[in-house]
Image (cartoon, rainbow, N blue to C red):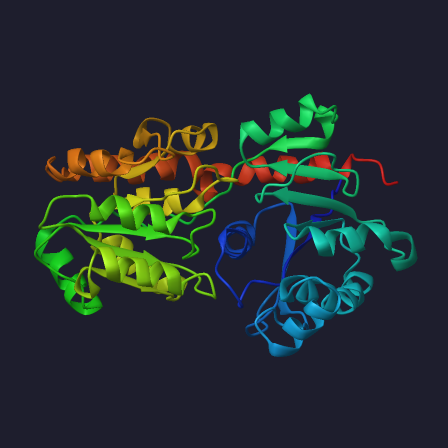
Length: 379
């Protein structure tokens, strides 16, 4: 009788427990979605939080700490890089103790160190890089690459990368049971809990509150161009030194009583999705865009830039327009606001996410990717 031991995977993301960007949310849900799968032994290594079954906190200098910020300035990097490098030796101890087959990661700074010192560490692990950022080729300091969208897989192959080194496997997501909330009374109750207006449409955007990448300034101006009474705008996401100008712009163009900009926990974000009517994101490109799936599974129509990655993720469920142009979002919002909320469309959006991106649907592809990664030569 042949016995194949389970593949031992260390899923490493020091941002888990510290910040809720796309890669941290993915790592958290990836572990939860794959943990207990037959043929797989997976452990999560995170930057903060309690130790639990198969998930462990790595000591690190958090990117948000003053010491990480100061050290980052000294070496002309940032606190994020310091967090990555400070977690390296604690991770090495875990690698030597557990001897994983694969180290699965999204943070390239840590991955580079694991590649550089692999022989000295003395464990023949394979490095599997999840390219959700995304990074551009060459991928010379890793053994295998998870490409989460066809565009970036094709860019790598066109640059001369071996097809055997790249697996096209999308992000997965936890999809709630049942139907999305669409009853007007339930939405009113949610808005009252969140201290949001109950008598007008609510537009939601989730992402870094800044003018770069997520282009929250564009969203503010486009909403402000709508005729009064305007919808209420909610901007949720990471806030830093780039955020006050966005808040000031919203105060100037919308008025304090017509918008909210704040950071909330990942669990709290779900309530805002449930309370909202429309989801928008101002970015002109994305590595994947898990927030699109979050919005869809809560039944929200999504207005996004017409870009190949967005087309891949949203398919027929998206509303695509040229968000590089002034007035495009304003027109799309004006058209959508006129349309009635249709429960059957909200249910359809959740079912699309469940069928295409739920962990139940994508788990076999992850296991195949891990097996394929083990075939990669170690240099």
